[in-house]
Image (cartoon, rainbow, N blue to C red; front, side):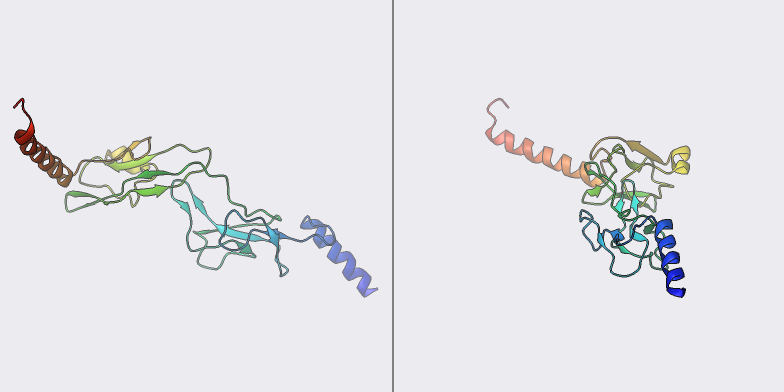
Length: 192
């Protein structure tokens, strides 16, 4: 009688979890976000994976797996309770933005572009400082914060690599190039 009750109870739990007898609980596992879900080896009935942040991408400290997120990683990890539920969303094409730092009244651009990630339904958005004060964004990818928009310390643009501000170094290089080409031209240009 006890075995019968245990079997009935186990069948009821499986029905509540949406699993028929003998059906495996599946999760994407490991670091490959494009992998197909595979059966969980333990009795896990939830999946976890890295949290996707629009315009930034997947959290880097979390892999895909069976079970629950590790304590302390809930800002970077998402859990779900359906078989195969931790497949990442469809992503749109990547784009690039420049990153800026404002310190001591000076705007400094990072020398390389940052790759930005977006879901298939999101548009391209880059942000940049509009002044040398109060800009606090840590990434040029994505929109300005509401407070930064309202204060006017940040502006947005909507195409790949659109957030370029010409820095004093850029102006110096441009002037130097122009002077160099003028000198070179004077030696070989017959119309001068």
